Image (cartoon, rainbow, N blue to C red; front, side, top):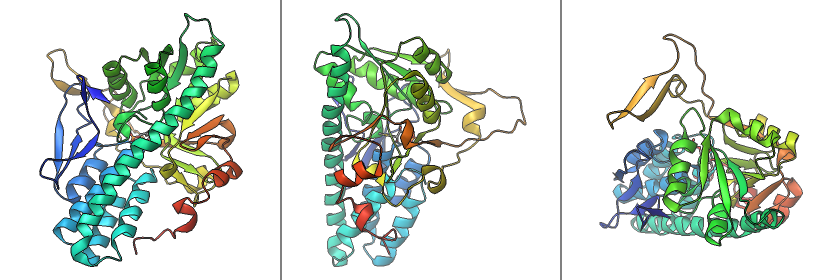
Length: 374
Ligand code: MRU
């Protein structure tokens, strides 16, 4: 996708061939700053601090983090140490573990001198696969948007609600939830997106709105609490969100607040879709509420808000009384029964174990033991 008209991925290898570049997403949309990661500590810090974020992207950055670690020291000990450090950076999105397992599997049977190069090769491939997967998700999801457009008056856009940022900034490129939207828009289908602001960190207001603005997709940012009201008034044709982990039975873990949108959509008969790349599926989890560890982040994200100040700087203001208790669960789980369809690279699936198992008989979480790095 483009920033200022220039094609940009959200992670890349720097011209030196070994260090890794990312956009500092904590500064978007106010500043476009690029960061250079030189070792696995840099990669783990960027993931934990959310300078880089979104389930597929943290997988890709962690993959490069392991390559950086092996470049410095390709021993078994260092592989295990860096794997553990990167895995601990964020607990909920399964893509992080998936990508670390992919790199481990690609290198651990090789003699140490060959490991770093093999790790970089697999990390590069993970990035290219991510783009191919998202393109396929976009093609399948675009057909859903086309079907809605066909039922509407020619001058009416398809109104889509999305939550958080499951766009190209959350992946290597194109996004998951946004891929159908970008492809539909580029094909000349009139779309309009209601973007949930997504408190506490405002990924919708700052990142998704930034992306759509750069690409020319018509959109409107709404307060998180407005979605149900808009659905009651027939102003939302469909919801498309992303996922940080989808269990074997189709429960969807995504950014906090997704569940409430699914409830409102269900109550109003609005189709609720999830853009779901296969590395986000975890067949080792079943009941999402019981089985998925939900990241608890700093209360400061709730008690304060960051934005551009009147003088053009970036500033943070506190919005709760001093000493107020705050709690900040970062994700929630939408039960499979509230999900209309999972838009995967292999088609739009029912949110059920049968459908997921039939579409992904070869999925790594069905064959690889959880402690793959050991
Ligand atoms: O905490 P974040 O910003 O990493 O959360 C991101 C989300 O919840 C996205 O919706 C999810 O990762 C899907 S990204 C394609």
